[in-house]
Image (cartoon, rainbow, N blue to C red; front, side, top):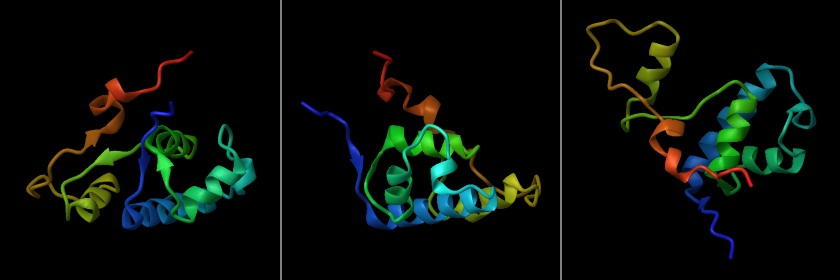
Length: 110
């Protein structure tokens, strides 16, 4: 029985796909040049197709990114913070690292 859970929220998948595609393109990488992820999988992710959390985390990591959770409406503020544009007086919640928060969901090596 396959117990892998897939992310199915279309809006979220479209945003993730667009963001990852932009990152890959900014690095000058073709889909086929990303190590450890099949080109067909990358294409599916970048088109907003459903994906498992493990695959999404793996693709982000291959692009030098990590996934974080941010309060709704705070993504832009957190992006500015990452770029050094947020002042100490701004009220920004700390993002959660998905690898830490969901460590119990990781696939164990077989």
